[in-house]
Amino acid sequence: MNPKPRLKPGRLHPITIAPAADRVRIRFGERVVVDTDRALELREAKYRPVLYVPREDVVDGVLEPSTHETYCPFKGEAGYFTLRDGERVAEDAVWTYLAPYDAVAEIAGHVAFYPQFVEIERGPATSRSL
Image 1 (spheres, rainbow, N blue to C red):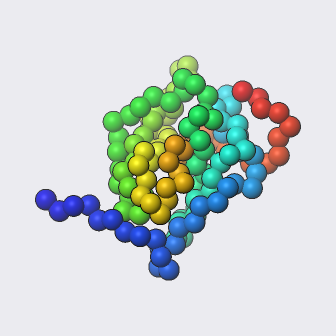
Image 2 (cartoon, rainbow, N blue to C red):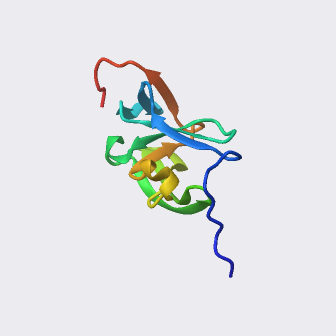
């Protein structure tokens, strides 16, 4: 059995993480499930940027653990959540790296949402609407 490859970001596959410049709101249907000014923006190689939000900034009760897992040689093992609000359900719509590799350690305790399941809004906000 071969161990999973573990790679470090570099010139050919850069990864950067920085605080998101804007407040981030994530809607699942009509419900705001995240409203935070603490999001991180991860940029990896030629992929689209991904917003990681602190798990504690997600509304209680909308994330259900999933058995789905994936592996990224640059970030580590990813676990998933199903997003649920009443009858609305999106299987494996949210992921997290519970023990991310050192190069991306900042995303520990954060989750990311697949944009096809939610609406992600960025911009200034005057109040939290949760």
